[in-house]
Length: 630
Image (tube, rainbow, N blue to C red; front, side):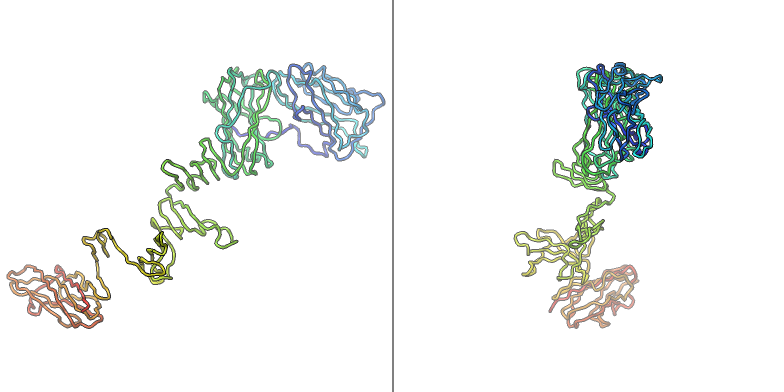
C-alpha cells in the first residue's frame, strides 16, 4: 500500500508578486496547461498569456521604429527545454501576427533548447488590467518520451517599473505533454465497485474501490514499466475547499492497493507518487511487465483506504487519467463521489455515522449503535454485544426550551442487551424493573393493567413507597374495588413457601382476619420442657389449640403435657405406657373460652402426674391456634 504525495503545479517556488511581477501561461483550447503529442501539428495551437501581477503599469523600453524581434532585441523570450517540441514544430511553429508585436520563428540554441523571441512594438506599458494574449500555431510536443511533464521558461528584459527601475527576470511554469495520437475515445469503463459515498464525520475511515474495465472485444496493449513511454493510470482527487474530498493532510494518510481483476495479482502493478494536471494528491500506476495486455472484459481494481473527511457535505470528484496507451489519446475519467452523513455499501446496507453498516439501516457502529434489520418473520431492532450496552428512550429536554439532555439524562425506558428492561430507570436489575414512587392511593400503582372497553377497569400492582408494603388491587376507578381471583381456572396458592403448594391454599405461617385467625403460636421447638412461645394476640373468641409433642421414661408409667397461658394452666393430658426407654407422641386438641382479648404467652410443661417423665432436644413441641369469633 502506498501513500500519495503532495503534487504541485510547478517545480518552481510559489509565486511572490513582488518577486514575479509578470506571470504567464501556455494553455490549450480547454484552458489546460498541456501541449499535445500528435502526428500532424498543422491544426494544433496554444494560447500564450502574459499578465502584469505587480499592481502597477510596467513600461516597455520602446524599440526603434521598424525594429523586429531577434535574439538580441526582445522583451520576452519563451524557452522550451530540449526534446519538448516535435521536429516539425521546432521549425514551423509561428506566433500569429498581432498588431503591436513582433515574433521570431523557433530558434535552436546550442544547449538544445528552443526559443521564441517576442518584441512589443506598439504598447507603451503592460497594464495589470489588460493581459496580453498571443496565439502560437503548429505547436506540438515530441512523442519520444510519451506523456510527461516539463518546465517552460519565460525570460524578460527591456521592462521597467513606474519609477524607472529596470525589470529583468525569469519565470518557470509546469507544462504537461499529453498524447493525442491514434483514436480519441478509449474503450475503457471506469466506475465504483459498490458505493460511491464517503461518510464525512471527520473520524470514520472510508474505503472506495474503483474498477477499470476493458469493454472492447479485443485486448488493450499497455507499455510496461521499462518502456521509454510507459502506460500509466493516474488517480487523484479534489482536495481542500468545500468541494474537495478531504484536506491534503487527511488524504496524505490514504493508501492505495491495485489488483488485477482476473489474476488477482497485486504484484503486477507498480504504485508510485503521481503527477496530475493541477495541485493535489495523486498515485501513478504502471504495469511491471513489458507488452502487457488488458484482455477483453478484464478489470483493474483500485482500492483507496483510510479516507477521513470532515469537509462540507456534497459532491466531489475522483479523477483517473490515462497516458501513453498505444493507439489512443491521453485522457481522463471523472467519477463523482458523494460526501454526506449517510453511507451505503455494496450490499445495500445504509449507515448513519458508520462507513461499515452491518444492518439494513444502522446508526453508529454495530455494537455501540442501533440497527434495523427486516427479516422473514418480522423486523429486528439490534444493538449491543451482550456486554450490557443500553438502548434508551429518553426525553430530549427536561423542560420546554431547556438544555438538551446528554447521556442517560431523561431516560424513560432502558433496554440492556443482556435482556433487562427498565422503566423510569437507567439501571434495571431484573428482567423488568419499574422505578417510581406510589403514595397517592392505598394501593401501589407502579404497574397498571387496564381494560380496553372501559379503561377505568384496572389491576394495579406496586409497592406503596409511603407506607412500605406491596399490593395487588383490582379496581374500577371512580366506582368501587373489584374482586381479585387467584387461579380461577384451578391450581394451588402458596404463601411463605419456596415450593409448589400441595393444596388449594397452603400457608407457611399464621392466617388472620377480623373474624378469625389461625396462627402457629409455638412453632416446632425442641425440648427439654418447659418451652414457651412469644407473645400472640387474641380477640376474645373461642380458642382451639392443636398441641403436639413427645416424651419418654425409664420404665412403665405415665407421660403427658400441661398447657399454660399467661402462667395459668388451661388443660393437661396424659398417656400410660408399658415400655420404658422408648419415646411416645403426645397430642391433644384443647378448646378454651373466656380468655380476654389482648396479648398472651403460652407455655408447654411436664404433666403434673408424671414428675419423672423425660424430654430432651430430640423431642419437638408445637402449638397451632385457631380462634373462632364466638
